[in-house]
Image (cartoon, rainbow, N blue to C red; front, top):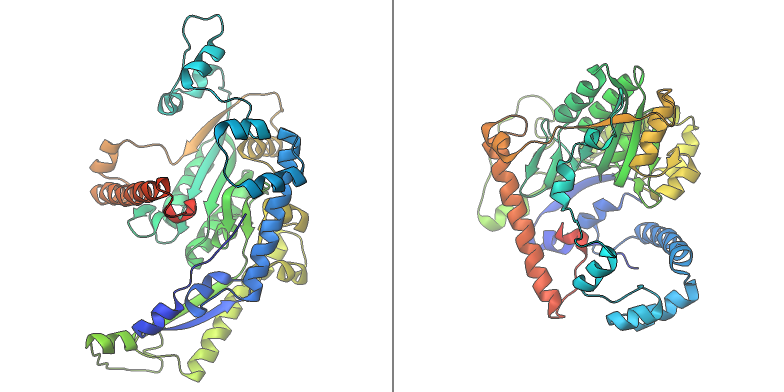
Length: 422
């Protein structure tokens, strides 16, 4: 297991771009991408304890599921690469089969093996399989970087979660009289603080009328935790990355780059601090002081609100915050979440809060509603033709890059982390 980070400080220096940045605090390592040429001791510490936690859970899984001890796994790691027969001999897989051999094994005495594709499976309505109940559990999906008003696909930033779009979905679920509880499915590394606050506030309002259970997916950190902690209950997978209660605020002084390009700027001012956020100047010492004070004041409000909702002291929350990230298992031990599990667990908790008997069937409905390409082209949330075009561009660029790297990897030229492709 390994973890790395990319830094562009030297690039910015060469371009003449100077960050004016304030981070809260040392563990909020995203800022180091532009402020440092390598990771700080705190950032390395955070990566190391996450790796240690993931290592522990993986070793436990290998022992329980494959009967392999940690010592055996480390021994196998030293070999690094395996042929399929070697993997079988090591106990990493059970069989080495071609598809026709697997098909014959699964088919048994049957003449044909009935299979179903992922897309066909997704099109089957749950109620046709006896999974329909009189009560509904709504699953509201909140995926991507938080920012802007409407959810969309940005060619640069990928999927964007707009606060108006998410709030609209939450309200639709709230107003449906048959919906007994809401599962808020969060998968986000964060983003804009204002949009996060507005979504989180809506979650709190709705939770006073109906139970709202957050189900954290891969990541619910920074703004992803901001939109979640005001819910009735928080559920995360043991390996979900959560927390990162910290903040970064900045502007860039672009004058050095403008000078290199021969670009000049001229200004007219009326009133003090008219050019506070101008990208042509650094903050003055007085402006910097006020900028940091304002940043701390907003962050302190967040800390105190987390403490109130999680029934913790301000000091306890502070010790877990300042940019630290935790696995779901660590977050549960520290009181940042309530339960460990996936979507099924979240629905179970939601049923309990809604006083629905465990053995009673419920109908699960999802928001936003799935839309086809024609609906995207004709308009609606996300910008109509623009949204569809952005999605096509984004998928084309992403898939093209992924295919290129796959080709390189096949020739043993490079290794690339999957997250970088995404």
